[in-house]
Image 1 (cartoon, rainbow, N blue to C red):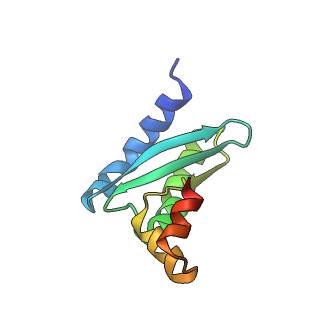
Image 2 (cartoon, rainbow, N blue to C red; image 1 turned 60 degrees about the horizontal axis):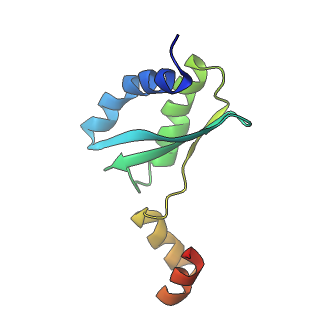
Length: 105
């Protein structure tokens, strides 16, 4: 019997070739068994890409929910090292670098 993690990886392997064509990939961050939500990280060229949320909702989420009934939703994991998201946050909510560093501690 395969573990839930094995089943998730097996299913993600079906979509990985398409992501890798664009220089990206997907990784499991964590699964919340209480809510059924799987949190994933987009890596490589997909990390920070403005299309990542639609890739998740249009393809990855549907595939995983269809093949693994325990998964109720798929969400992009919050990553502090996501340069693109960080840049957008700074543009929309300007603060000094020192203020941001204090918040991160």
